[in-house]
Image (cartoon, rainbow, N blue to C red; front, top):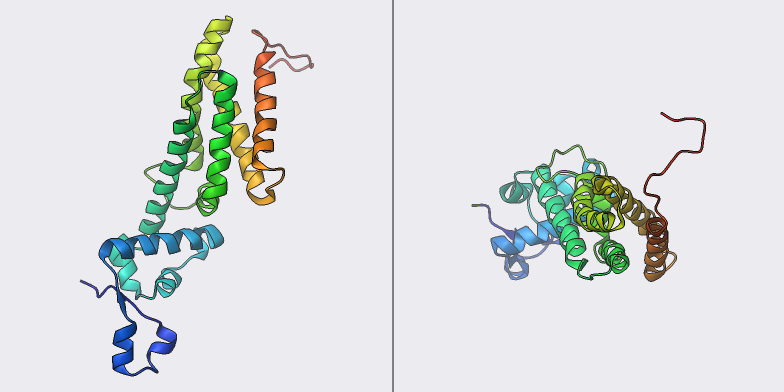
Length: 226
């Protein structure tokens, strides 16, 4: 078992042995794992997967490289755990927010949930929207958005049926609505203007009034028909 102890390599060598022992902080395996996850999340968000090295992760944690390998098997394993946690966090926040009965308020809740996640878990969102060369068992950001769209699809299907529209088209509209919110969220991630509530209001404005005046059988007005 590798000695899971943090040290300050830049100054430790110049200190007497007794002082070095006093400055060492031993962590439990769980504490070290969480520390490495936090450091990895910050580095992956800032530099991406390719730009992050095991050496830098270990250095920031004050441990040797073998400690990282012991806990995660390498950079790929650490990245996979970080991505899995962030995807579950976002999905839980969005699905947990869908509590209202009125469709318009549900749209507001979904928009706010995504914007809340971006605001509170900025590093996580930056990681999710990056392209990664690492294959994930949990999928990609696109598959996560698809999971959220499935939740919206059920709601739209009921509304379509009640209005006499074809409920089989609910998946298409769900993907369009959720995709619009997700892409707007990526843009807002950097600009942070206007304020979150205003962004949510404009998103719902476009979604709701578009759905409110939805044609049962939309037609093309241009010359192209296929």
